[in-house]
Image (tube, rainbow, N blue to C red; front, top):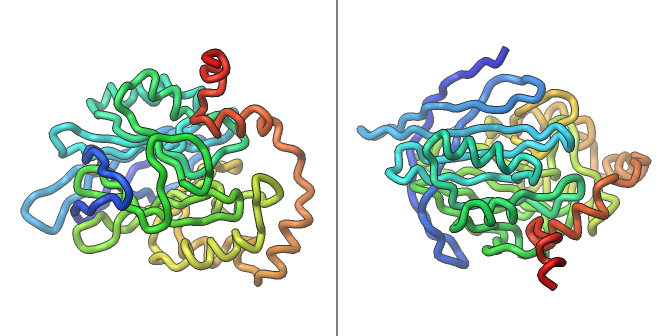
Length: 298
């Protein structure tokens, strides 16, 4: 049974985006204290320490074919109810947009943690169905998008923001999006780690410019240094887990609790099969998931 728990989190503040001026719709953050297989959604009410309160809406959505999590975050207290999607999948775009519509939200951004190899991103398809939505990916990925981000950038949505942390290793362009810090931002923080850090695991490092040494450094310097109660929301899970914390992974991750040399040995001996979707997914994701449309236009 799905069990939800409300958390009281702090409020919000607006900070500038480093490279481009972004529209200010979207906000959301929250937390969960449970584990369930293939959970599709949840929401939380949060309250600021000031006299005004904000409702921060959060949904975790699941795509079963690739075991991918998509995350919807929105500022339900803002007049426009701006929202963003993290790691949308092409197969579930209609579901995601229907949910956005049902909740009365205005989708502003479709953002990816990296160029995925196991599914085609829904970012491009979303843009064709919801004009005005901007796609976001890291500059290091060298993929197509409307907005490119780098380490230290802040993606504003409403009075909240996502901090961009460069976490290469699974691929050269991996980033982790972390909800804002400070007394005016929701607590505990949330980290959307893509394939860099999974629950009790991590992404493979044997393709797309991957490096076990780089991944180890990324996790230990950019994720494990976050507060221990920071929630970890990965792009995938294959064992029925939905959320972890930095503190849990520091203690119990069977790979990343090891020293670096042991970790590198583990990764070199995984003997994983060739990703079945990589030859389709990577070329498509390099053009925002619109490979078919671009080839027809050529």
